[in-house]
Length: 124
Image (cartoon, rainbow, N blue to C red; front, top):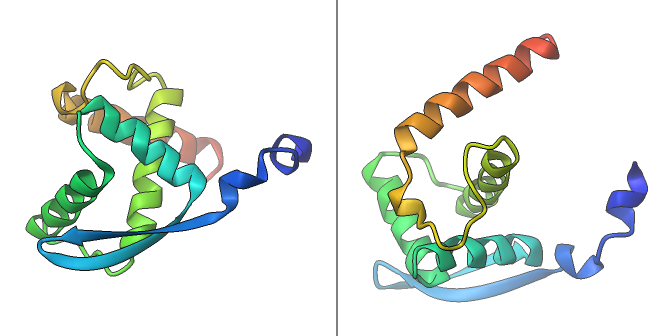
């Protein structure tokens, strides 16, 4: 099992910092290359830039009154959830289908159910 991870391209876990503006304020975000690649895939689907999407996520998180004290962790979870939704068949990995057009409410309900089933299997 470990060889699957150990022998992966080490470039994926090297970190890169990007500077961008969020609501007019210059900030830096440091993520592993793997997550930058996933963010690039996601933004391509909606014809945005990574900077535009990160700004949108940040501002919408503030509007939703989320605690985004560790925004880079939030971005990692967003990327992981994107891949998890694809793995669970809730979302297609189709770069021609914008994420803005998917039925988020339905997907979130199915995700909640799937998470509950998984928890019950492991006794949580």
